[in-house]
Image 1 (tube, rainbow, N blue to C red):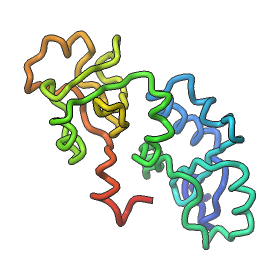
Image 2 (image 1 turned 90 degrees about the vertical axis):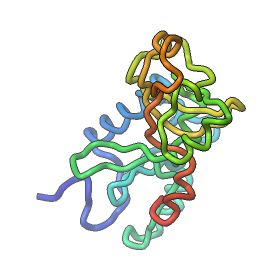
Image 3 (image 1 turned 135 degrees about the horizontal axis):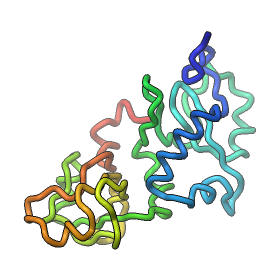
Image 4 (image 1 turned 90 degrees about the horizontal axis):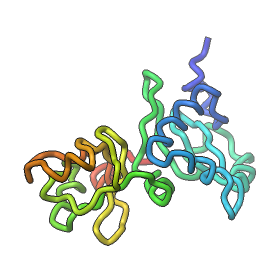
Length: 191
């Protein structure tokens, strides 16, 4: 009996129903019903494929071209959205940021003086908070932006929008999950 999450052959394959559900649930926490916009795009149809426990987002056109490459020779294809852990949880990778950010339902903008700290993997404090989407609830997944509207990473709201208005400047308002600084910090392992 083989584990469907780790094919022995190393072949790239479509996600199982369960893998698709788990991955879509994770993405939906950030972009809600906009998930359909990732698949049916104006520039073609895109799909998700699993390869070595990593989920790749790729256009059908590129997928057809790659059909001539054997699975054991294929390193990656398209953009890595995340990976499945050994316990079958889906972990979003920072490489998905550019695809999810335009559709994000809940956003946090941080002040320039807080950007470097966030890009080193730290939480966002109230003193570094510029703006937050109205009606953001506590523990809601958010996309973190600079004040210049540049997506910087993913996080989880430690406080609701209402609570952010009245907390101490040193209180944590966003828990860090991933940031674009990972491209430099984890250069050798990021795929």
